[in-house]
Length: 126
Image (cartoon, rainbow, N blue to C red; front, side):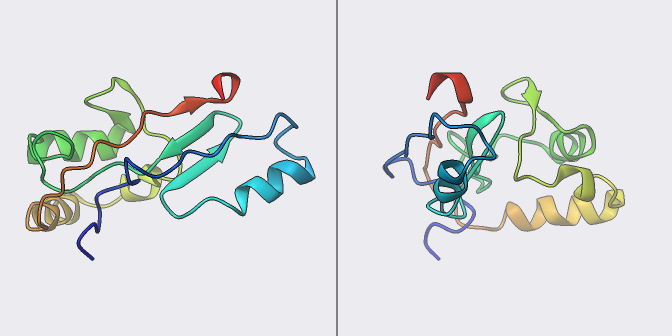
């Protein structure tokens, strides 16, 4: 619970993706080794973001408007890229403004955790 919502642990070993295709038995086995803070697919390997209010490694500098815009559009405000799986922004983006603002308000009450999550690793670079 001390690390809740802080994303993929920065110091956790990053496993190499198999060279075999994403539908191969090796790929399926690899997917079974990932924890709930890692996600892999044809785009590569991505890591859950730190959504605690830590101002350096989380969303502590975000405003309510930035949060709502990010969830509505699926564009990551800091990295200028699309939000990647497993973030179900398409589902959350259909929530009303009051619901999204409530989620943001809750996230700002969580204890901040300093955890700089690794950047996504494209399939070709692994």
